[in-house]
Length: 141
Image (tube, rainbow, N blue to C red; front, side):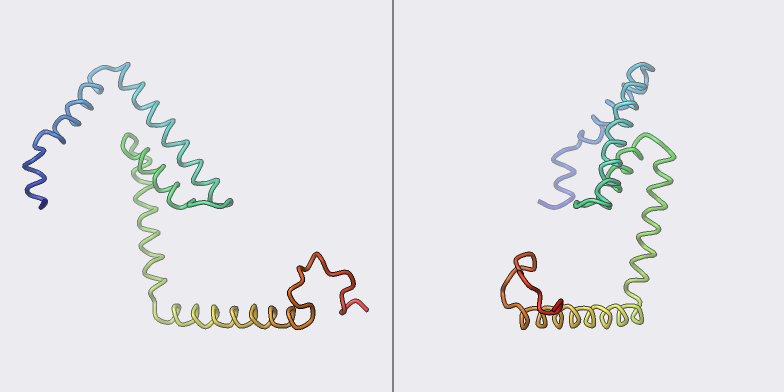
């Protein structure tokens, strides 16, 4: 199904959503409740993303999704999301800079060699014994 056929198959999909939101905006109580709900959900996702920045999980994705939810109703969140997108674009440009990319590849290779050398040294001294199961370390005596 092409894009044009999809638009023809669902002509009123965007219109219904737009009419629904206009109907909510016309009632001050419903509009306040809607905005409070969007704020609550968006803030929860944003805080979850910020927590996942320091714990395992997709923190950056959670933060951007939380800002996107908040940006549907709040101008300050739209500005923050725009700044985050601009920062991500700048970081992408810097990451694809050939000099930085070459430097990062060299540093990654050197780090991998150091880790491999450490692993080989450990295995040559202790074999496949776990570090916490070594009774008398040879380097202490």
